[in-house]
Amino acid sequence: MDNSLIDSFLEIIKESNNIVFFGGAGVSTESGIPDFRSKDGLYNQKYDYPPEEILSHTFFMNKTEDFYKFYKDKLNSLKYEPNVTHIKLAELEKAGKLKAVVTQNIDGLHQKAGSKTVYELHGSVLRNYCMKCHKFYDAEYVFNSAGIPKCECGGIIKPDVVLYEEGLDNNIVSKSLDAILNAETLIIAGTSLTVQPASGLIMYFHGKNLILINRDETPYDYRANLVIHEKLGDVFSKIEIV
Ligand code: ZN
Image (cartoon, rainbow, N blue to C red; front, side, top):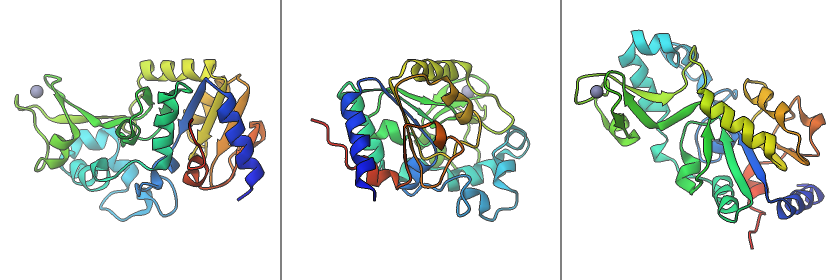
């Protein structure tokens, strides 16, 4: 590991009091949750249907039982724990340095680590609603139900997760944009930035320090003040909050 890069990273964190973190699947892979798009990830495992099709709105509506078979098997994040990156981010927020986490992940691990302001662009498995009466159900109820999870009114429960063919929540997008627009330091981590809206959102950043941490190169490396190609946990574990 290049220690001078880590030192620069720690220096920026120390000096900044308005940090926003933008994270992708790579943040949770170190907790054991597979990356949707990596070559050893979820999308290359074998099912009756390709995972992109299963996780679509049409599939949910037409083949709800098959959807839930896959969903309960593969997207149950209740059995995973936050890793050092989640924990350090929660500590930075508590110390008043970090203003928001914007994430593409749906696993709820930032909240489990103690983060309060988390903008989940793709929704969360922790929230579930009856499609008929809109009653709320938690993740335990859905993941522990047999077959299709049903509401007491008889309606089908749908996870508050943005499926393919569905639009993002405008309110979450605008809060994310606002946080990024006003940030002094933006840390982008664990995402290849090749998928929207990630690549679009970071164009709104006009602050002082843009930090990119990713295992592989990204198309935005040239825009960053600091680029670190290391494991996220190895970088974040160095942060000491005093
Ligand atoms: Zn209901």
